[in-house]
Structure formats: structure tokens, C-alpha cells
Image 1: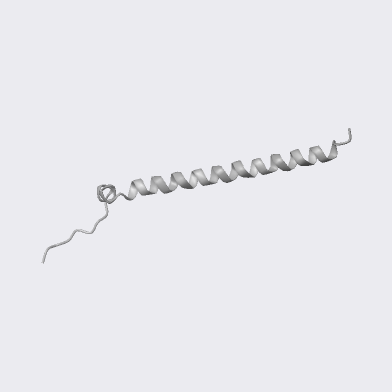
Image 2 (image 1 turned 180 degrees about the horizontal axis):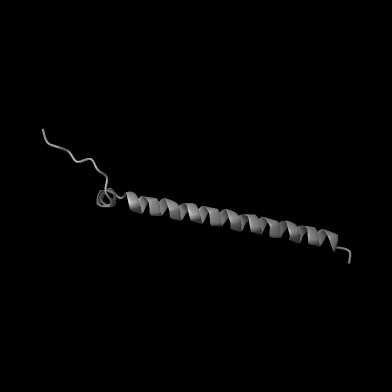
Length: 59
């Protein structure tokens, strides 16, 4: 029987593609968080704009 070395090193992870997948998932996660923040701020801006128009419509 052969002795199989089962230690996980950075080179084996790089060969598998584990590190690029972590970077890709992390990048998508950051993009989603930034998109949610932007949508939240856009929603707040739209609500403020609508309320401002309603309160100052007559004057």
C-alpha cells in the first residue's frame, strides 16, 4: 500500500481553484452589500423627495 499524504497546503488549494472561488464569492458578496446600501439610500432619497413635494406643494 502506498502512503497517501493528505495534508492540505496552499499549492493544493491553488490547484483545485479554492482560492479564486473564495475571491469570486467575496467579490460578489461585497458587490451585493454595496448594491443594497445604494438601493437603501436611493429609497430614502425618493421618500424625502416625495415628502418634500407634498409639504411644499402649495407654497
